[in-house]
Length: 247
Image (cartoon, rainbow, N blue to C red; front, top):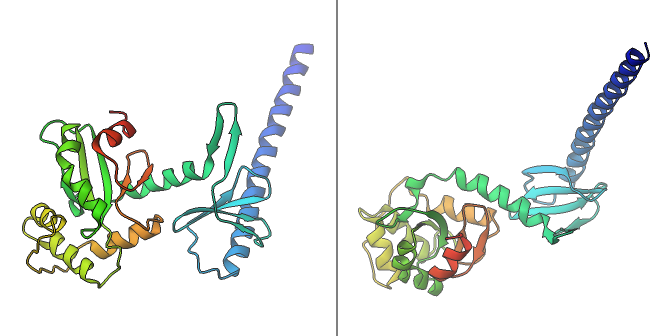
């Protein structure tokens, strides 16, 4: 009888815990929706892609173009910057962790056929996405090292990011490269400072890729996106990139 009563009591405690957890989850979802409505009512001009409570009580994590920002639950104060957590192993950048997850999701949706790829002749050990500008000095330096990346098993997939914007001479040149019969040769020629024939195709991805880069917070080129979602701003020599990839 004692054992039976004990089991009943334990079951009651467990059931109460489940109900409390379910109630808490419902409260969290309701609070999040209320916060989202308050934030969107501010008309900040920011496009909200996601909202969830942060690890800091009273602070919400809001995903917008460029990454995560933090907003108080009354939607009155906004913090644009990195949130760190002090762990036994040291400081951890929670904002970068979140942004990396978002970058991985976005990268997975990019059609490889819309990039201009330079794969190694042998096995591909890693593939990186590089937002590039044909008139950028460090972009040209990176392209000069294509053989060095390939020798280390690294495939380079270029995305267009004309820093001067849509409709500019650099934009037009990059459209011509993506629309060329041989995009790889055309892009290489532009990065050498050579001219290429003007071409235009309705389905070119240059504008879309430029806007994608802006949504990721890219302002300069080259910007290298690693498979784990890490973004390396600027030029990275072959040996440095291989180390970052664990090769």
